[in-house]
Image (cartoon, rainbow over all chains, first blue to last red; front, side):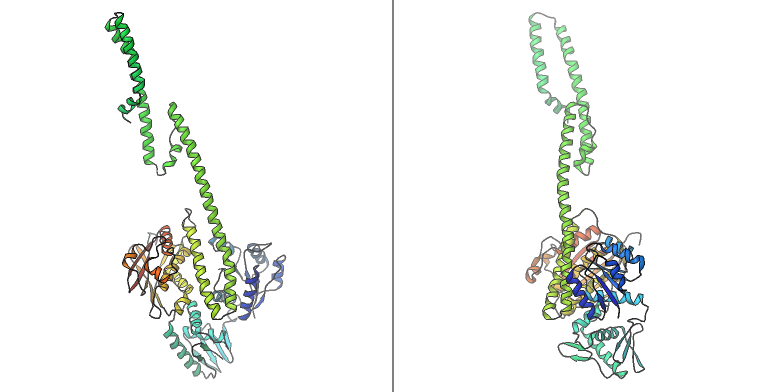
Length: 222
Length: 334
């Protein structure tokens, strides 16, 4: 489990961000005392830092520079200042990415994943596991009891979204939104066709639990 | 300034001299002085006066002609007093000083308003950044508590965000200083990111999107372009019919430009309204029928596009759809 430190002084955002990231399987630490923020952060040995710029005591730029002196931990700057200068400044001080508030949570999640994958090599989060099914994100294949099937890009996106939300109903709109946000602009009919094909492939490798349709609500992997 | 006008201006002076001369002439005639001597006195009297008037006329005429020429050639007429040389004659000097003082005062006055505007703009910018924090929290709260109600609130918040963007770009569009950065922009990436931003609306209204035909690289400011495109796509979504709606975005490359076209099959714009869509505050019939139109969006787009040196055109047919084209001129560099 990757550990994320959230350095953010607005209480509401800090708490909600924490809840949100925990929900997606991250361990989070959100310090509330900013006096020794640099040492406190480094002591946690995080895998990633989400850093605000406007902070009490030290500003984000200073923190970023100080952390970079001793650590290479990935830093994503999250700020409401959205001019090019701030972005340039952050990058120059060694931040890995720059996101402006208010952010799309899915995009934030995607950026976190990308950076973690890049930093920790390809083995982390490159395969998603669902019961006995292994989904390999890098080559788009599913393995179940030594039987393999190749998925298309669309099928891969659908399956990974359903696995991430396993046990929960994902509405068609949410599923489509997820796909659109990963650059696959499918329409309604396309989605149905893709789901049907995906079901067949999962049957093909002998998986018992398959994607279920909940009429009027969406799809679910039990 | 002609010699006639100049003489007219000196009428009183000349008249007094003539009257004086006639009186003296009369006295001299009474005491039987030779008429030749009177003629001589006339010459001695009037020759210096006339030569003085002529010399003065030439001097002043050359000054005013020069002044006029400078005025005509000046782009910013109020800079006249800075450019003109100080004249050597007394009235000129006096007027020159007055002009300088009036100008200085005017500059201070203008500066006061410029400072006020600048301050206001700074306030707007800070305000926009501040309000983004509560919006970000609201978004996260919604994300963590998903249900039908929060979903509706989310849609409203998205709209609020768009209005806020408008405020920001409105204040930016009025400024003379250029706060944009020209960089290489891939049109495909740009279009994708704006479409993604509006993905929820496309999906919930079942509008299909076709962006296959977008390619090419232009040099412009990404954020301003995103704003313009977002307004245009937002309009397309607003005025398209649900379920059968189609938005097609494509580029065409011509000899001198790249044209990015956003085409929808929506309700279109009435012919009588079409020439006024870029006017500030114009909402037209569609705006009245569908509500929530401020008449600012397209006006701002046009203004920002003009500042970036881009063309923006709109064609539409009632019932068939609307086509908006953003024209990127190609320089010799590409």
